[in-house]
Image 1 (cartoon, rainbow, N blue to C red):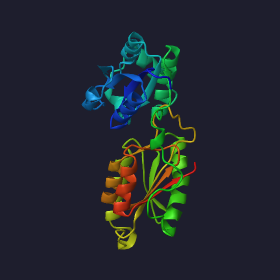
Image 2: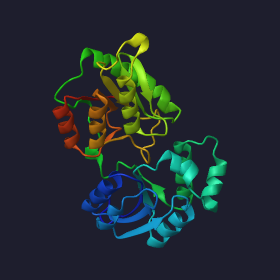
Image 3: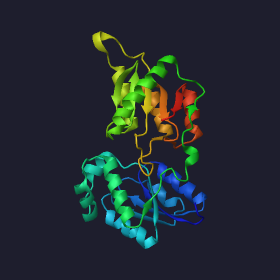
Length: 283
């Protein structure tokens, strides 16, 4: 990427936008941030961006006008926007309302894809949200000290089949499996909430009074069949490992090259300390 290239960063929640801002600046880019009032961490203000403009989630016209005024023609989306925010909590301006009315299906991909198309028409080109962060993409193979057990391997294989079916409908990308049974699937609640719900289910009593407490959980998170790397890239953070420990999950399967490790090597270290196996499979 050209030195001193000006980049627009559309910042969602979590640490992803902060990391991307740091990495882009380290590689010589000037970064203009469009911070979403309902989502973006206030820490974005202190990371050396050339400008931070705050706006509400529904203000697509303001986003475009801000980037044009700043001379931004290349932009990156980083960080999630909660599904429920997108479809219920926002007051769309006329430009976003027009986009919402045009949607065939009301899922995140169709909406953000339509927004990306509007940005493109306005001369703002969206690039992959993994730009500047390639070293944080999961490499293929067993990443943890401990490889998966035979039982976990079976759960991973079954989980991948289920998760890929789920992901192609843009419902969610994570499933939690125990003994080749699907315990929980992700919808709008997000990965961590799905893992915790699976943990709660396992702490309850199974059929015929059979306690399910001893059965460990395998978490499988996959990319969508046509994952658009410009937005909604699967991410794993330290919090994911902490949540797995709380829920009694012992194995994590992800897609190599399609999942960002937001906390880098610290994720593998935390997994090793907890005895969790991490495997990145080829999509």
